[in-house]
Image (cartoon, rainbow, N blue to C red; front, side, top):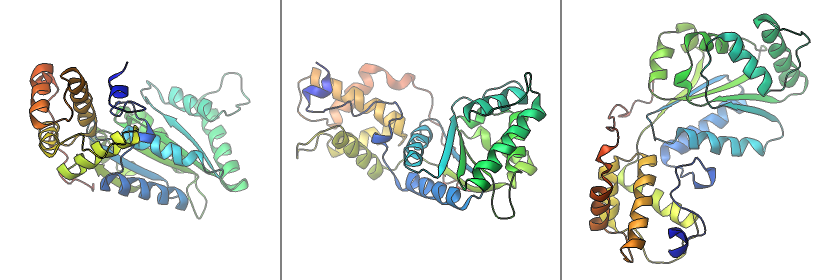
Length: 289
């Protein structure tokens, strides 16, 4: 039997998969999500979300997709790995994602661009729908593919952009955008996700265990445990989930009833988590370009 069933959970509470049902809306994530929805409704074009590894960008994108699926007036697609050697391969990927019909046996880049432009005009103007493209791991975009996206952002009416583009990426994306002035000036909304503070770490842990079906009134993670978890993980959601997962396994194996500070320290020592990559401190309140 899985450890989480022994503890009364219906599901695993600390999976690192980007399940939107386990998306904890910290203040920063709520700000990002709310603003992204506003930007899309107003059809303003380009939004950029930055964040270090493990700050919740991918989970944010899955939560956004969950919201978009409930809207009949929105057509969306996501590119999860935008690593392409050429502009033509990248544009062909977009055309396939949106299931475009290109009336040429062997289309060149101009044929693909024209097909995308017709598609965006048909959906955005004739059918009055909003077309959204989400690019995760956007730091992998090279200068050629960024330029291709810039061209797509040029398609617009007198009132709005025909494509709503959302880029989610690590801090390297910031440097790439800064070096392209003709891309930078198209950014309508930009935001950086920072790690959680100790209180938000506590709320994330509580939210996840309740979401997984834990119904006891007893606090499963004591204050000292939360304090030690935050100290060690520096508030990075993915690292919090990994450490809490190991703590719950240890809880069952050691036949304890609650996760306390001593248990968390034992887990850190036993699992040798000190082999984790060094946590960067580069994200201190950098919410603007």
